Every structure is written in C-alpha cells, then in structure tokens.
Image (cartoon, rainbow, N blue to C red; front, top):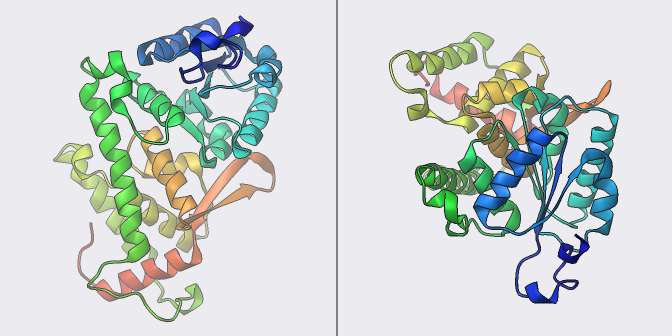
Length: 307
C-alpha cells in the first residue's frame, strides 16, 4: 500500500501526478468517493477512516489532493481532523475537497473560505468531477475528466466551467469599475452614505423572487447581487447573517453560492466574522466600502424600480 504514497517511492509512476488520498466517515461515503476518483482517471493512494486519517496524511509524501467524504454528523474526531486539514491547506501542503450533505453547511462554514479547499454540498457527478479538477490543477481542465465528460454530464461540466469564468469576469469588472462611471477620488464612508429604507430593499428582494412564479429561476440567477441585497437588508435591520442563510438568499445551489461567497470575501467585498460564542459558526457582512456603494446606488436611482 505504501508503494503508492509518492512518485519518489514508486519509480514506475515517476511521470504520473501524485495520487489522491480519500478520507471518509462511512463505507457508503468511501464508495461515493472511490467512484469519483475512478471516473476522473486519477490514481488512488488509499482510502481511510476518520480515525486513521491524521497518521495517514502525515505519512503521505505527496498527493494531488485530499478528498474528504462526509455523510454523518461531525464528532470530536472529525472536527479535529478538519482543523488539521485547514492548517495543512493554509500552509500549502496540499489541496482538499470536502463533500458533505447540506445539513452540515453551518458547521463546515469556516472551511468554505480556505484558499485551496473546495467545499461541495450534495454534489452531482459533474460537480464532483469539477471540484476534483480544480483541486488537482491550477487551470480548469475538463478534458482530463475522461469518463464523466463523455456522458450526459458533459453539459453540466461546461456549465460549471462557464460559472467559474463568470465569477472571474464579474469580479474583474467590480475591481476596475465600468468605464463610463469613473471611481470616486474620495473614499465613501458608510457614515456619510445616504440612508436606505429597509422596505425599499425588501421590495427589491420580493420582486426578484416573484420572477420565479413565471419563469425558470435559473434564467435570472445572479447570486452576487442577491447576496449583496440580503446583506444590506440585514445591515439595516442590524441582524447577523450566517453562511447558511446567505447561501439560501443567493437562490442558487449551495456549492455555487459558496464559490461566489468565497471569492467575494477574498476580493474584500464581503467580510466574515467569527461567532464569539461558537468558533465553528461564521457570519458574513458587507465591507464598509461595499455598504456605502450600495447605499449611494439606491439613493441615485431614486424611485426607479430595481430588480
């Protein structure tokens, strides 16, 4: 078994990428993870239980990624392992994918912001393949996911690839600003920004949700704007917004919402705050500049309907 730990230990595979190590909390979870790795054509280093994982990770000389498959409630051992993985990923030792049911989102929320870690919730085959491709390559390479890309999920993979590209282009526009509207020379402070009636923001959110009665919801998917509106509404009402609630407000699958949320935090558009009473709970709020910009936006459009 240890012959597969690294390329240096298995000279026959010296030109192959390092294998993927699977950690799972049940036999069913192990089966799901094995299927994902097998479909990708990636070599498998080993499949271990939560209790064995820390020691096995320590002995793993090289790995393309660590795949963690969770299906049950988190216990002390699992939480300790996740803390270890977060530290390793932060140190750049390896990249990781954590696949879990949506019910665990709030407990796993702190991990969603780690660079080099993909958190996927209730993922389908295409989302699994996409997460593995992201974890094992610096560039999205759908062609490497051989078996999955050849079947009915190929369209889903292309959609996920387009989604990542859309996030990148949207954030690029946010960082530069529209050419027709030059950025303000003086920074806008939130205390100087106009007040926005809570009912105005609530009306916009209701109008956006109402479209789903008449058209497919994914036709208007705009998670970044939906999250901005939800956080502004919460800020006006002086409420805290946990990650799970913000993902619901985004009106897209949780994994998609997390991808947007993670990137917007990295760009400084959102700010995450740890719950002082629960270290594993995370709240999200608007960055001061973002809040001020939103308030000025609503002030400038006046009574014009915004959807």
